[in-house]
Image 1 (tube, rainbow, N blue to C red):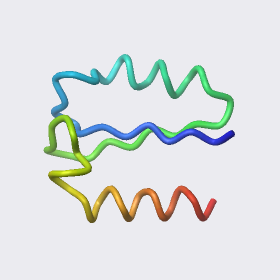
Image 2: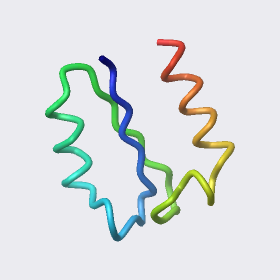
Image 3: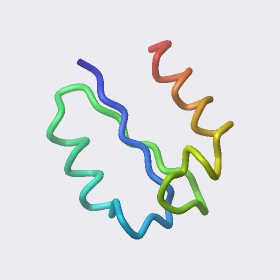
Image 4: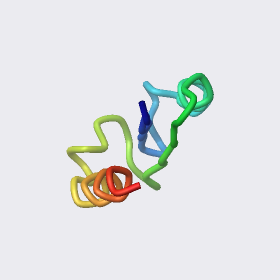
Length: 59
């Protein structure tokens, strides 16, 4: 099953190393960083998140 891991580049909760580990543990995974955003990026950058989700689902 494809997995999408998404985080804001300034997220103090879901660290980059942890997100990369999640990505690397899944056979088909992608990590997307949303520049300049913190945790709960779906609230601070909803259009960016929606666009990334649409692109991910299309592949």
